[in-house]
Length: 276
Length: 185
Image (cartoon, rainbow over all chains, first blue to last red; front, side, top):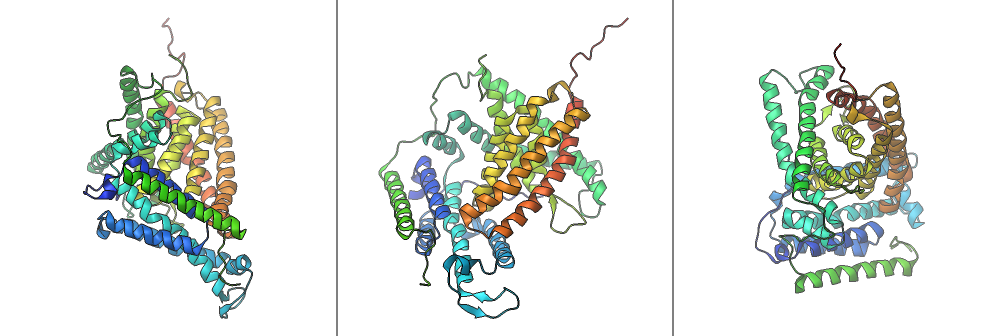
């Protein structure tokens, strides 16, 4: 089985040269904006800005195509779900009814519903370019340093760093165990009956889990011998000082956040209403 | 050594636990008779490791594993469900105070304690917090998110109840019981 995951893509672009901490702060601010607002104008602006910055990072679409497939399927299902469960949510939010298509029951298609679902979809889309960019342009070693930089305890930052470091290791032991068990005649495909398939999955997962539990002991002993956690602070090999572009990016994101919040408070609602 | 809430063992357990949590998201066992439903192995594993290493490790694995896993797999993070994963991890971990898994003890009483904890925290997490956050953050219709939360919650409670209990029991069998040595006559 192939496990498709995003990973760091090395390129020489201004986005790659930004410090991880600045990118992390920007990503968090943009997520907060997208989560708090329903203002179509801001969301569209975020989406366009995201695509522009994506172009600047020189990441090719085919490198991330599998992720986009997942997201599109999810959003499609989500939109269908919203429509099935609440076809008049839009009208109750915006307070008007413009029927486009008469359908039985309460399922008449309204302009408000379309606009509301467009906004929900935009909320997801507005952050996707930034999340993708953050992952593919930040070196994993720098990620932990960035977390620590923005105030996360270095022990937690180190836990994240261990996770990123051990994903390939766990993946490798999974493949080794699977192949060993297949050589002994275990079949995980759909041809087997459910109960047998469960037992055979257990034959792979239990050794995987138990061997990794042993690894936890080995690594914590090694870290203890190297006096991990004895001091209040630590330094990071991959830590870099903020440059001009980092300050600019953070300042820009903050301004957008303030603008978005100001618009919401000014309007008294987080929904931008073009209908009245 | 000074005992603090975030010991080296907790840090390492959180890090490596999150790595396994992420890998297990890719391995799904389809349940034949219900279409498009798979047994969530990640939460079964989360139950085991939280019961061994405690609520801090459990919460961190839920948080790191779910957010990083979402980011690596889908390129975006669904924060509402990430928070619920962290809460569920903490809830599983709270059961560890009343259990002695590392001493190989996991009898009927312990099974009952573990299942009460997993049922209560998962019910709060999936039935209440997940839908509430979905409404607050994404403004989604209430009935939709409650149906989603209930389906996911019931499925998770049942799988953790059956397979989580089984996995913890298996782990307890590998531990040496305290006082298991006897002097030969």
